[in-house]
Image 1 (tube, rainbow, N blue to C red):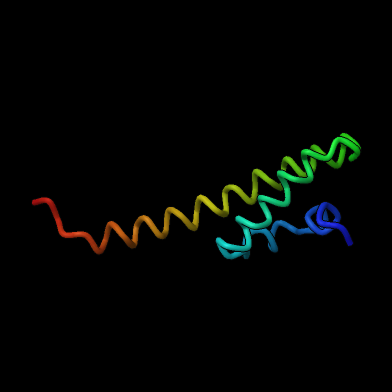
Image 2: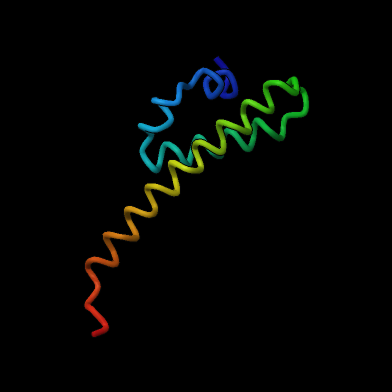
Amino acid sequence: MSAPEQILALTAEQIAALSYENARDMLNDVVEALDDSSLPLSELMKLWEIGNAITKVCEAHLAVAAEKLNDGLPSAD
């Protein structure tokens, strides 16, 4: 199964469960697939939607990490 086929087969639950590292790598695969002009428009649109969902997963992981870092910093009071 090619990378675009694997990405297109992902469910919303599988996307939500991705670790940051896996989501980041998968997002790179999405970008590469979107650059492939031989894919049908319907697949490109679906990849775009999946890429947006994966981006949200990455952002959520980064927000948690930022929160942990901020909690560990001394207060400016």
